[in-house]
Length: 72
Image (cartoon, rainbow, N blue to C red; front, side):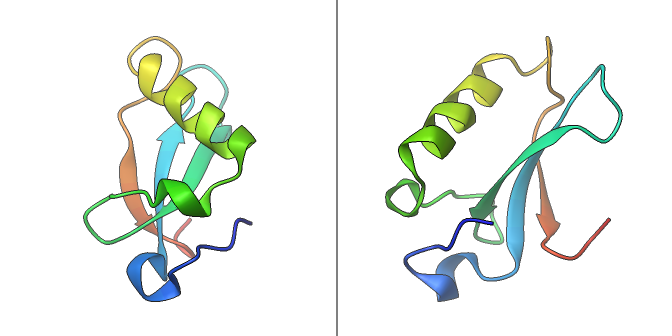
């Protein structure tokens, strides 16, 4: 799990992109309650994955949802 640089901003929330084709597969990123991702807190690979997921919404991933870190 990625550690945000400002825990109060993203504590407890993830922006989750669910796969349209592979049940259980998703990409998740720490965010605030409104779904704002703090890019400075992400690794280069995580930023790359985030932009990829955004680019293929509707083709590979469903639109993202803000979920609690411990929601299933």
